[in-house]
Amino acid sequence: MVSAHQERVAEFVATHDLDAPPAYRLLDAASELGELAKEVNESTDYGSNPEAVDIAADELGDTLFALLALADATDTDAEGALETAIEKYEDRLAERDTAASGE
Image 1 (cartoon, rainbow, N blue to C red):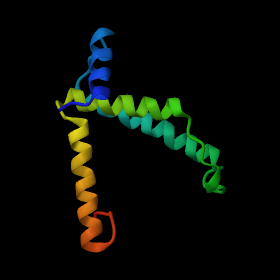
Image 2 (image 1 turned 90 degrees about the vertical axis):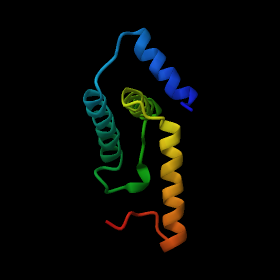
Image 3 (image 1 turned 180 degrees about the vertical axis):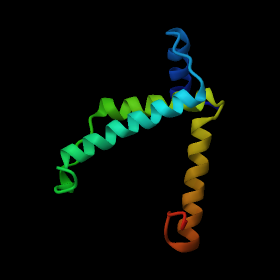
Image 4 (image 1 turned 120 degrees about the vertical axis):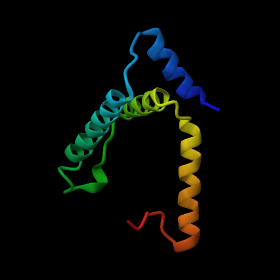
């Protein structure tokens, strides 16, 4: 079942004629994530002060919007995908005490 947030993004995209193919949605998500990385780099003086991380909520929101729009463009249930990922990490932690893929 598609989450209310994903549905809201889909409705916004449709209402404002912002439909785009999945490839464009992926590029948009990567761009938004890049903006977050830039904020982290700048707020920490490029890692010199890691405790100073400052991420603007609106930038994180832009990234979430882009990811939910990508999920919708690919007919992916974002909430289901998240649940699958959490289960995968839980399994890894139970099996080998790390959530990392090991690759």
